[in-house]
Length: 85
Image (tube, rainbow, N blue to C red; front, side, top):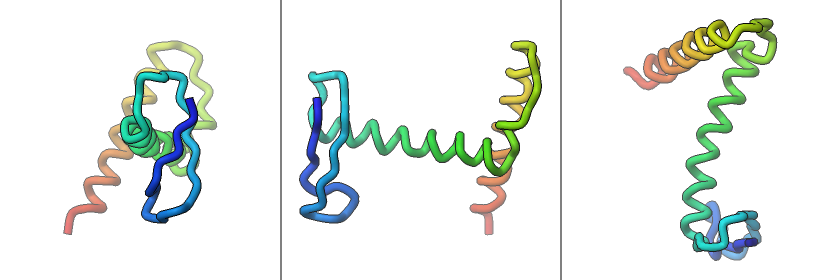
């Protein structure tokens, strides 16, 4: 399903297309999912670029889980400390 929201991202008349395989969803639900997913994508990009997640060389599943936890806590700390006055 291709959805064309009327007013996407504050620009009336701007054409935005969102692809979705679930044909039961309407345009507003697709846009809501996209907005939620965008925060996740930014989080992963920050972990790769800022915290060096793309350069790790851990092979065990337990090590990867621990590394994810450490990076998630580091990102959380940075976000919280940045928003404090």
